[in-house]
Amino acid sequence: MVTMSHAQIESFFQAPRYAVFGTNSPDGPPQLTTVWFLYEGSFAYIGIERSSVKYRNIERNPAVSMCIDGEHPDGHTVVIYGCAEFMETGTPASDDILWRLTRRYHGSDEDTRQYQESVKELDLVLVKVIPQKIVAVDYSSG
Image 1 (cartoon, rainbow, N blue to C red):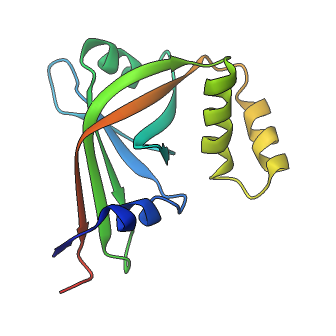
Image 2: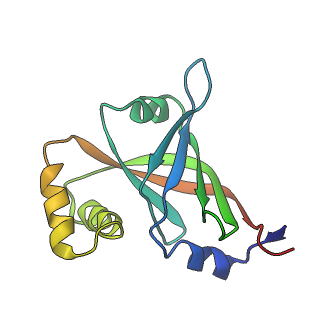
């Protein structure tokens, strides 16, 4: 087991991987959801619906975690522990982030536009995850 460098973490986040996003349930186990994410400028961003359990959990307790796995045989795993803040959509800054986040997971700008059109009626909000601790391990070395 080898700890990844900052440069290796940045490189790892370039691929459109899935993250398991964890929020804290009020009186039970963590609530886990697989999400798309964008990591830029030392922050992670995800889009969620305002009506979701994740949203209510974050409102009550902004402590969150994310686990991003490189999948077999990659051997890299990054876990982010942090604090979440909401960013309202509909502003130039948030819409730009949401575009880049969505574009990562689609093959073209047109596919991205079609996807965004299909979800335009949802009450979406961006979650900005401010990392407090990052654990990044390369299990393929050693």
